[in-house]
Image 1 (cartoon, rainbow, N blue to C red):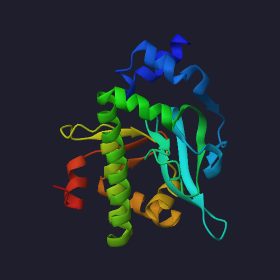
Image 2: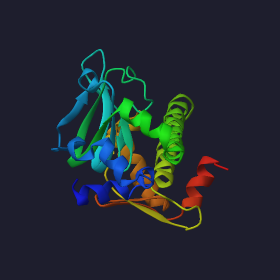
Image 3: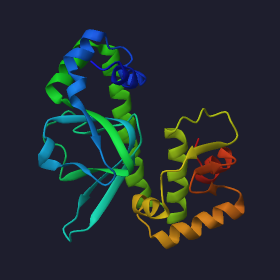
Length: 232
């Protein structure tokens, strides 16, 4: 097996406890996938029974609505899992996954093989359940935001969730994230228009709540975001 690929995936907490033999059993060298920017990793029926781990790059997850329009559910960063992450073989519900903004590297596992691994390695099962639990909570929070919050509050909430997902320690006054999002991306994700998001971001910058460039998203004072959202 390639030592480089072995080390690249082992850097993530989910895989840190695997032995060399278990890596070999997962057959990672034959399950690594490279996809070019814009290429679709799957539509629903193409990869039934597969779980994917994003090693590098970004993935757009979405579906085609009844009018033929793309609806984007989320944009994933490296280290995240996608596909049939509930380990149910019929859970994709028409979704697609697409390489976004750049080429991507990922690996794919048969659900049956992954389930066997979880049964043998409880520490991996714990890491996996935490990651999936957080993923489901994020989805639930976004749905609640769409139902109960105005666009300004939804945007602030999304920025705060980005801060948390990217490792904010709860102590530092400010936090920055490498920017992988356009105004249009954010608008789609929070159920708004690009123009509204652009106007709100400009307003946040004037208020000192946010600095948004092509390279970075900077929150100068995270506590101000928390206070604006009344997050305990």
